[in-house]
Length: 297
Image (cartoon, rainbow, N blue to C red):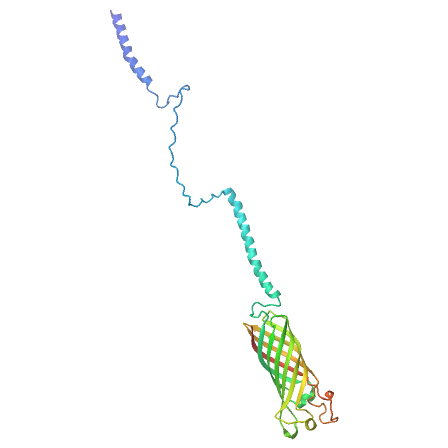
């Protein structure tokens, strides 16, 4: 009987332990999840969420292009080269314009006339170069003049001038005192050496008419050895210096005037012959030193 009871108790114990072992084997190990079976198919992935389609404005400007870094570097180099070229071009015309203003010698854009037209008024001193004339008149006399220059800012211009002079007479008969008045109208070609510069030296030569009159005295060739009037052909030549600033002109010049056909004062006074020709009269060449001020446009 005892063996039978032991067998029954052992069988009951096995029955009690078997359910617990099956429950423990059924729970998965959290540290080692079970690997899916190769034969078992994977579940399908969920579809992506639908994105809303943005609305497009037909009047909106197109988006700016995105610069590619690989292309930006060459573009920057090209821009730098273009900037350098533009700078050189902007400087070159300025130099060319300045040079053209001096190379275009027959036009000056800084003046209204383009060539320079000036009018100056001045005075100075004058005298005769021949000794006979210096003995008959004062050694130095006064001089005044008005001159217009057409082409003061181009290489070749024209001077049109009126010149007046006055000298005292010496040794008149009867104790008289008189004055020798000279009146001159002349034209001269003028070469401006530095036509476009403020300081301009120039030379000139021309032709003119000259008249002398004895005033405040009565003289005759027979009693004084001189006539009361004389008309001459004269040839002025000389040099001058002008300074121009803001339209104003200052001028200094020296002039020599050669004359022909003089008939005013006998070379030898009252000595014969008493029917003289122009060769028997003293030369009436003169010199001048003068200064003048004026304006040009």
